[in-house]
Length: 288
Image (cartoon, rainbow, N blue to C red; front, side):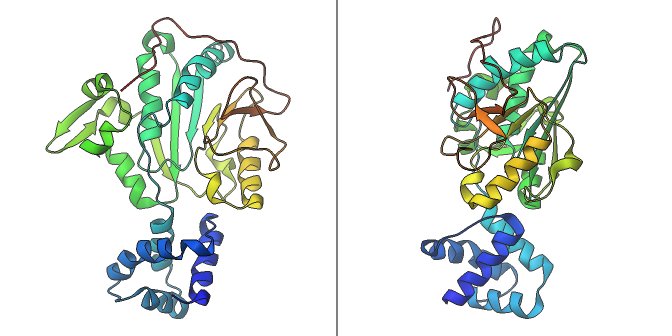
């Protein structure tokens, strides 16, 4: 791989998805794109680059972007954000939205759907507390292939063993051969759709709670600021934003501030209140 070819593909990735690759990631680029080359009946990475340069085929470029931006996900990843969702966000929302009983949640860059389905299971476990509520969970990703996996709700034994409590596995999944299919009840709670975080999210509507975890780490500073600005526009004053453990808004955006005494959970600047430590009765944290 030449430096020129590496820079050429990196520019496509940054323009199309915001992904920024440093020079030491050349091995990653080549290893992930060789299967794409084979799909298009090409022998080498160099042939793939040559095809894109000469044909500028949108389908090939899309495959390249999807191959590089498909990241792993697993149920109840890192545990803590889901504790915060249950113990801080939901008690606050139950009170603040008691009048209209509506709640919208966005799982951005949702990959194969485990985060969105984890939230759906938590809400289902709340039972009568949400009786009469209209809950809308939207999972978005720019990869059509990974979104289809999310919509199918079919997971391997390895995937359901990563973070999913056995009680929830038994309750909400059915074994199909060597795979596990999530129940229609949970699957129908989530609306998956293709979406690029570089686009203005206004058409997605407003969201009370946004999960955008382990995404910003792949962007440069201007792109991070742009994504955060877009999210801020679509949140109410008392909304919540979840970022990954290695992510922050410091030095990037003044639109959000960390909730006092918390980590990874933010509110709009000037709009957040110090959260009370509330845990609704019977609201236990799922453990493996």
